[in-house]
Image 1: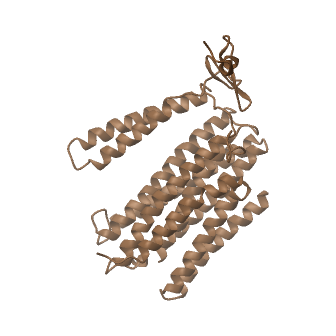
Image 2 (image 1 turned 180 degrees about the vertical axis):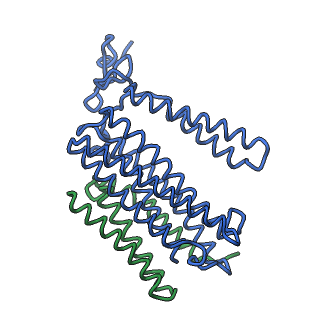
Image 3 (image 1 turned 120 degrees about the vertical axis):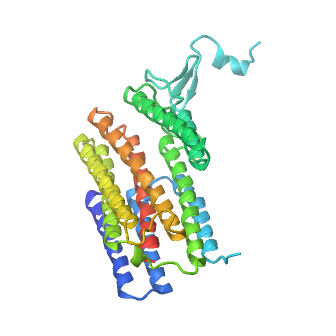
Length: 86
Length: 287
């Protein structure tokens, strides 16, 4: 990706961050608001991994390498969120 | 008696095995450079880190601090020694590309960095998962907006995102053979990292000195906040030390358009630290 494209990714990252703050101030706390903020954060992480870390252009073996830990973390987080105290 | 299949690779003093375009000789690995690829520094570094963390976990006992100091000394000795070896090109790395499927087209050093990052994903995933569990089950969790300064959090997020841009521009510069762009990019990254740490320090100072101090002993919300942001800050600090080292090496002409894997790996690490903050910011300041 050329410099102009990288700056475009950075602009999206900053805009999404500002959007997170606007959503936080504009709407009362709710599951929908929290989910929206989470989706914005996840979209930023995906762009950083794909374009800043160049994963999009890496060999398939490297791309597959990050699937197991990502899967584990998603399972772990979902388990934690929906767990009940003992 | 040497078997026939073995005689071809052991006969004579100059016998060698071909390995990925390089050769294994009687005197060890030779990759067309003067140095060898064997170094004890990674082992020293791991030992120092382990002993330091062991001491840290035993701080409640009288012998915890001495163990931590010993570990710290080993750690510093290993880091300084490794960087000196590297600057003097005392050792060189073995074949740059993996030799076995499915890694035949993967640079070994970059592969190693990705493996390291996958372990970090699990470490921080566990920490953030634990935070979410506590948060979901804690009856009176304080509103983040009442505790944390959202302006400072937002500033730090933009600072760190910008540092990711500068480091990727540094990688692209040296890939095109531009030494000046590399040094400028790394220097900007270092300065932005220092800005992040300064803002974070100001934030901690502010929280410590509130009318009702939000310090290390202020309960569970404070504990998880300081642990998570503290561990992240330690990663930023580690990245800043790496950046400073890379700047020095770059000024000595240590990188070129053919040899920049160190810069590339540093970039991967720095972006990962950035991604962590991308999740820490909303989890602790917004949600």
